[in-house]
Amino acid sequence: MARMRAVDAAVLVLEREGIQCAFGVPGAAINPFYAALKARGTVRHILARHVEAASHMAEGYTRAKAGNIGLCIGTSGPAGTDMITGLYSASADSIPILCITGQAPRARMAKEDFQAVDIAAIAAPVSKWAVTVMEPYQVPMAFQKAFQLMRCGRPGPVLIDLPVDVQLAEIEFDIDAYEPLPVVKPKMTRTQAEKALAMLNAAERPLIVAGGGIINADASDLLTEFAEIVGVPVIPTLMGWGAIPDDHTLMAGMCGLQTSHRYGNATMLASDFVFGVGNRWANRHTGSVDRYTAGRKFVHVDIEPTQIGRVFAPDFGVVSDAGAALKMLLDVATEWKTDGRLRDWTGWVKQCQARKRTLKRKTHFDTVPLKPQRVYEEMNKAFGRDTTYVTTIGLSQIAGAQFLHVYKPRNWINCGQAGPLGWTLPAALGVRAARPDADIVALSGDYDFQFLIEELAVGAQHRLPYIHVVVNNAYLGLIRQAQRGFQMDFEVNLAFENINRRGEPDAGYGVDHVAVAEAMGCKAVRVKRPDEFAAAFEEAKRLMKEHRVPVVLEFILERVTNISMGTEIDAVTEFEELAEKNEDAPTAIVMLD
Image (cartoon, rainbow, N blue to C red; front, top):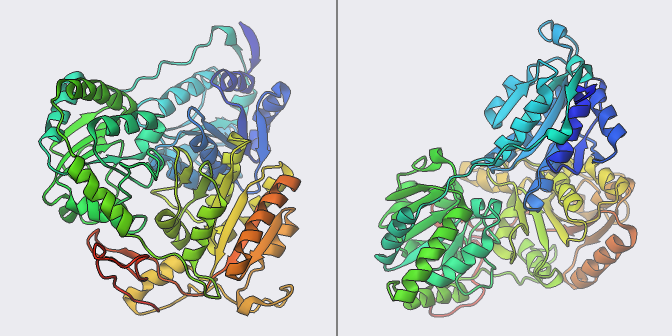
């Protein structure tokens, strides 16, 4: 046993639990914790410019690498409330992050002291656990419990709030005797696997829906192997994209109202059986439940018991970690294949492959200003198979999911359910901190980029290089497109004549992102014409490598482009013609503004 401050014990626990990097902003009520961090010197700290951004950096750090848990730190009051968006987005996507906040002294907490707020109560609905630790000896125990909760069952975030006098109090603690608490995850049984496979075997046109739980379980190889053994096509969800390579013969495309492929929706509609693993039947994947489920049977495997039947009742539900389920399913399916008990779906697979070849959206446009589809076509040429894309929401993200290609797990890092604007930039910095050698490309519309644009300075200060593609139409594009249903275009226009813009005014596009990026210590390149693409991508790569800072690659788009989407998976409006006209491709609906 050794005598130490409670915060010193907390830092020792963080080390033992594997924390190597933190993102945050110091302040009076959390300074004792920062003093403990500084004294140990074992945890890298990256100073954010906004505490919400620190929470998104922690998310990016977790999402980037299996086993990671991102840590964000802030003082009392508004620092904690700023982190709520990060807690929400982490909770919604089953991402473990640890938020640590300072708090007023215990005796002052109920007296409306400066920056004293009940952050544990505020954070409770968007975290697995939120606690204000009132006894100094409980500090290391609270951290121990936090790590167990973040890792057990459905992963998720935890907030620990530390009154300043609790932080400073001395306790007896022995780190040599410390052990992390065991991680418990439910596992599919052989009987459950056999029943699920028997239902699969009875299907004529089955599909596997691969969710983000497969990524969380680091089980993408198991998914691909299982799909290959049974010979069944895979529809990844947006959060599961990359679990099977885009060019795999069994990758049948994504399904949904927005971030989907034409061939993915068509294949889903043609199916009669869906085997969901690690997914939650998100509404932008399903559309109306009655339309999505009509004529199909469903098996649903998820680590969280309350997810089974939450959206609709499956024909068979199993509570299991996705990795454990796929391992058991693979074992049983291999035996059945050896015994000749598995059905052959070769004909169905060929139909899915034919749709994948023919039902493609057009991307090649030579117009000026640029069409966004052409930007994604050029990104596919410029960036390799190992590229990690980071994005959050908007027409930029929707079009990115429709046109880009992802070949590996954790190479599509997307805030799925919450979708907060501003998420992309800090999340990309967190990804870079976790993976120093990765090829990282962030993707934003101009408004997402502007939300937390000050975090560019973090990338410059801490040498966190990546390429940030900004598609700029000076519009809230997704909201503008949604407003078409109300026959309006109201308060979504970001354009103005910027009297300080250098050089050509770009027809009143407003904010000079190149100037802002350079003022923040970063580099930037602007692209206006199709013949500038190749050189611009090469210049961005050169600048990033040479200067080791974020490089903004801005594309000036036409003001209005509608991106394919709809209210049902069988009623997606296609605003552009098909890439190739042929007898297998249905006539496109063309509705150009």
